[in-house]
Image (cartoon, rainbow, N blue to C red):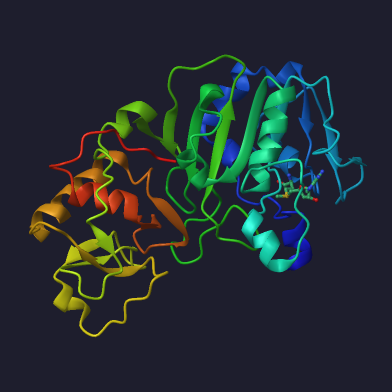
Length: 333
Ligand SMILES: C[S@@+](CC[C@H](N)C(=O)[O-])C[C@H]1O[C@@H](n2cnc3c(N)ncnc32)[C@H](O)[C@@H]1O
């Protein structure tokens, strides 16, 4: 597994190229008359999937540091990116810097990004006008490369929106063979764009800036303290496997639960003012409904209702608690 991880090597299996936003992008990028670059080609799965979506490209050129099929040129494309291509369709290597450090895996010195896929994406965008990349769903919260991001699709397996082959509900077709990591499809173009269209598979969710308006203003109120064993407010910060269950609660509900400093799932919070638990939960419910959870971190594994499990981070929880007092817009970084 670590050899796979070292090169961020999870081959694509689900088919995001069947989706409407990709088909629109492919038309604008004129893939029929362009040779498509796959700079991290692995076993050349992406062209098969594009063909299965009944889309034709003029031709393909493939590179990989460790070719997984005939016809893939061996090259470290992060160090020496192929030039002269207009259009790139790829699933770049994913590897978090902290995971590399923890496991003693190499990570390029040439970048400060916290994940290899961001560096790979920067390379693709530097040399290609049109780029489609299969990347972690969390990318949309990073604020990176938004000026060229036309559409971003949260890829939810096993939905009835035509994303993947399976519709059993029990055994969804994930995008990769051996990871259930939440995945997105980022569609970039050559020009500066004013806003990003956000999708869940084929369902249009809204414009990025419109959804952002439903977020609470950020709060710097450090008197709201998390993981305080004497807290006067409880929080279940992660959805269970059944439904959207994140909620604030009375601390007594947490009983003897031992609060740990690093804990990000269940906490007690100390707030300076009295809080109305029902109001907080109502605010949270409205945010979730209006933003389709786009700005909440997704977890691996789907809930029974077919959506990703989500986590409410402390910054947003603080903003919800402090909503009556805070002024400045949420900073998503
Ligand atoms: C996530 S896999 C995707 C493979 C293929 N694009 C697919 O979708 O099935 C990433 C690929 O990037 C390759 N890779 C990692 N670092 C690389 C580098 N520096 N230069 C070229 N390829 C690299 C890995 O060997 C792996 O095949």
